[in-house]
Image (cartoon, rainbow, N blue to C red; front, side, top):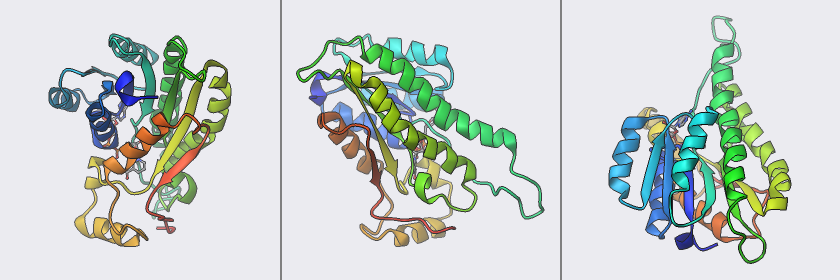
Length: 256
Ligand SMILES: NC(=O)c1ccc[n+]([C@@H]2O[C@H](COP(=O)([O-])OP(=O)(O)OC[C@H]3O[C@@H](n4cnc5c(N)ncnc54)[C@H](O)[C@@H]3O)[C@@H](O)[C@H]2O)c1
């Protein structure tokens, strides 16, 4: 699939990994539709992205919002062939706090809702739209890329909710690829390591430095562009399907 002949739908595209991926695909000639819950940041990135980008402010867990965003994604002259799930939230809390009180159930549900149910909502609704696109040589129609995290495999202390949500996104990859094979839609998943985005920017400088030192090679935090080039490879390589790719500099996270 040639990037310049497609339009792509990117959730969480107003910040961090999603915004970098939108920027990267635009630089390769794609048309892009960005969906994000943060309308202020969305307006700012759309002003930067220019005339091959549009957007919709909404919540990925809301079917009406996702359908409206997908409508915006089908106004381009190029077919919608790619949906990338980057919307997500982080949360850190122990199952039992130091004072013995339990992890909030509401918070656990919220993380699962955005990271897992939001991803599934976009997967199910975007696959319907992509399945109606003209078929390419080889029978392909498009590809959906989900975003997990290495916390899916090496969840740390305090990551019960986040790691559970991302572990489920990993487990979704193969059955989704199998379900959508009949309509020529591939499904892949990227599991990033520690990527320097606003989500991580909340951490103190010395914690960021320590995290960077723990990465075997290259000894730095990941960049959102490290994700974007892998997303491009997945879009272009029609034989990548049902796979989870770690992008982490060989980092295996310790318990804390
Ligand atoms: N930064 C990292 O180190 C890292 C590592 C592994 C995985 N990830 C995952 O990558 C994805 C992107 O993370 P990021 O670091 O770019 O974060 P970010 O906070 O910079 O961007 C996430 C975007 O998602 C949007 N969003 C959140 N909830 C939403 C909702 N319900 N509906 C629509 N939009 C919503 C936010 O407004 C924000 O713009 C997330 O799924 C995150 O879990 C990040």
